[in-house]
Amino acid sequence: MELTHLTIPQWQKYDGLLHGFMGRRGGQSVGCYAGLNVSYRVGDDFKTVSQNVCDMKAAIGIHDGKIVTMQQVHGDNILEITDRKMKEAGEADGMVTAENGIYLGVLTADCVPLLFIAPKQRLAAAVHAGWRGTLAGIATKTVEFFQTRYGVEAADLEVALGPSIGVCCYEVNDDVATPLMKKWGALTTPSIAMKDGKPHVNLSRLNRDILRDAGVPGTQLFQIGPCTKCAAEDFYSYRREAGETGRQIGVVGWLPS
Image 1: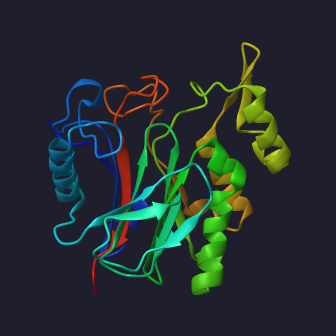
Image 2: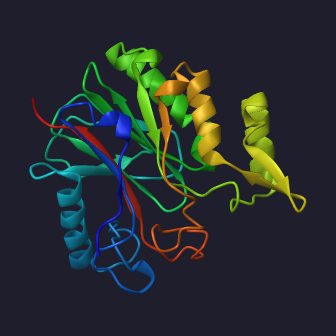
């Protein structure tokens, strides 16, 4: 079965940029992980995951080099990655690199995966934004990281927001909706809808509006992919499977010059 590999059409013009949002199609995993599970932390067989990772790297075009992932904790910590031999960073929900030949990966199963690039400087970042990370402002903090660490302005960034749970399926309680509304104010107006008396959140839309508010031009924000909970054959969903499921990955990095 052909692997699901979503790319950003506007990024095809950048020589040396490898990126993509993988889905669950293909792969060797079985049971509740069936498909292309690439997480070693969900209980799947390690050898099977390793084969899935190899297949995924080949699909993206990474034939030399490692994909660095994080110990994601639903926070706002951002790490700079400089070691080409590293496979897993510490606890964080964002990684940034200025090193070509390092590929950054973010694992998701409903949360929003964000891939950042600064094309002129050939920089990249991968970010995990669940509701807690969104509340903590990890998208804005990544923009600020580019500015303070590399002198890259928000207007020079481009961001892709990959497949995540949609407003159709992301029903939350007031303990989630109210803090988001208090933190982000009017930015939440298009992103929180009432359905059957319960708030439903469009996390991807909210992060996109947060990024635009932080100075990233709307024409440089790209949203791709369906609701992960709805698209059962194509994507893993933590909510749909009540926690027992695999993880898909979003990857970004630049080939060595």
